[in-house]
Image (tube, rainbow, N blue to C red):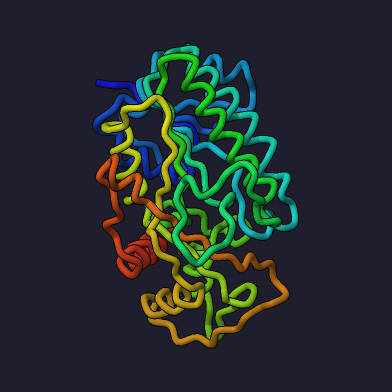
Length: 317
């Protein structure tokens, strides 16, 4: 059985990857804390507590065994409030941990490394954007300057290390992913889990941050894990950069209305313009993933939101 390393295995993407792949790979799951995983351990999975920001810790991790696949889902992540007020939180730790992980993966001869990037480098546009629609000479939206350049640097490191050894690298710019095991802490979560929690707890009013004019390309988590699986099975080149999203932008107010419908809540929507707001629209053109991997999303918006609301009501509420 092939060996897979999942970094950030107790996080959103990492836990969903663990749920999908634990029966088909021998998995080592990296946790940041000595505490048991929030949603329990999976039988047959090796759990390791490691600080991925530490060079010696990362070296020791990769010396344990030769991994065929590494999913690098560990990251310091929070919500839009910190993106605006404390953007440095997203930069240094993420650059450092990825630098050590990518280097040791290449040096130890890992077969394939997959790195979730994001879409914050794209300028707001109403038209779907391809991977090639952004270049280093383009400006990054001011609120995303730090995190956007950090993600681009990590993508370039993937490309760099893919040229030095036999390890394949995939960087994928995923849209706003949502689903089971997401963060529902209002200080750290993204728009969909924030809406689900707010609607669940609301009695008569639902406060939406900002003007409500923003639109988001949102993707259900199982579609992202399908994408990762197809990259592992089908990628031929030493490095690829992919978009991975719904290919459609949904207005913030529509997301709010669908969540209220699913939760059977009739609430008064109140736009809280005093709260942090990033009124942008980014839509992903995912033709490259469709052409090279035969991938496209399977879960529609209402189905995905219903699945996520059901999971929240059962496990978090």
